[in-house]
Image (cartoon, rainbow, N blue to C red):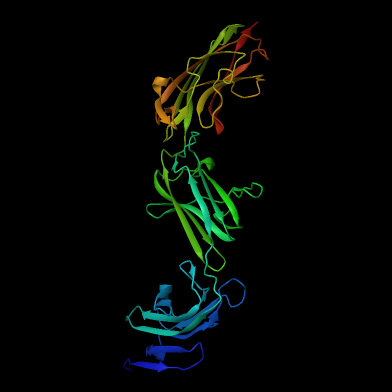
Length: 416
């Protein structure tokens, strides 16, 4: 049977349709039994006629297009060439196109099918009324990202960023980083809300329904969980909020990641000497440490070669514990000082290290692949709390973790 085209005009109610059909195998059109119910929707999340159900049937494998045309002739695309096999299909339309609910008005809906094999087209159209629509999206104010240059390497300097914003209505919110290639890196969930008690949603999905208020995120690039942070480069921090009817708003801010990576170092050798000494004598320790990671690690004094007495510790020498720095430490049996690794030294001499000025302050770094020797001295001027105590070395990443603990325990015979 030769193919022909027939225009058929049906005058029906508000949901009347204009169908252009082309005869095909079996006498069925490409797309048929098309219906949108109800023919008027009010997308405002009140539970009454918020959604229209689009149903249709396909006779052969087709590409299906669905769009809405407003009274100014502008198209709003809902489905753009979705491949469909023969069968029955349904789609729910809640009034939102590309994150924006269509405003009140009368629209022409169009369902079009294109036969992939022959290229033939058929369309069905009709009218849809939108009334009482909530077309105003959720509002975000006071969006900030600080600092704008982020160095996630656990050196204690600019290791984290704070992202905050004020949400003016309830919405589902997602925050992520987007690189220049379009890849997304989830930031996670807010940790602090200013008008309520702090809470922690670590490990939950990246999208969360939030009430109005001021929200804050503490982002470390995943490094605190042992994951590598996103690669160095330029990023965009994105806050995306969607309300219950499908309106979506997005705010963005720039971010640069530099010197990111997991810090890794290891103690390679430890030697204590002499193993027998009198009260008032000096115990010596030599430790070699290597940076086995891909980023520089920060360290600080007291310098290699510094002598402690048994009554002193790193605090009494004025070298207080500092987040993110690496130091070699020595501890011993019976330590009652209240802190582990009472005696601590910088990784290597100043000349061994790279000097950097960060935020106006001098910092020292052991570079990747670099190995240094640390020498320490402890003069025993008080009777030890235990006869012949064991001494050992450790590598401390301060306020993060003890990297190497209880290395090379050595019994020291102290005569008194």
